Amino acid sequence: TQAAPAPTSEFVFVAFQQGISADDMAAFLQAYKVSIVEGPNANGFYTLRLSDPLPSDQVQQVVESMKSQAKFVSNVAAS
Image 1: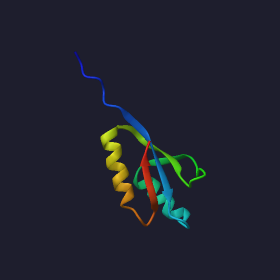
Image 2: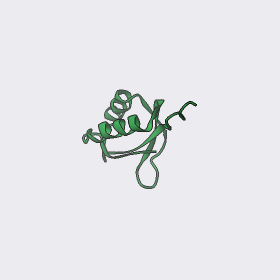
Image 3: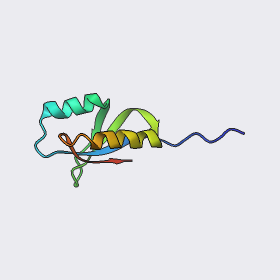
Image 4: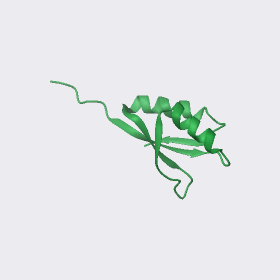
């Protein structure tokens, strides 16, 4: 019997710093190989699509890495 595949996710939610420049936002998106799907919502979060779906534990690593980019983001959450 094969084990069930690990759940994957392809979305993260990001609130960018107020006043972030278009160039800084583009650099952040390019660095993480993500694209904006929608947003910002009422709480200021954008839905970003990862270039490839990742297992949940790897998505959490991406989220933690994004959180360390305080110059660009004020909050990050996994989907």
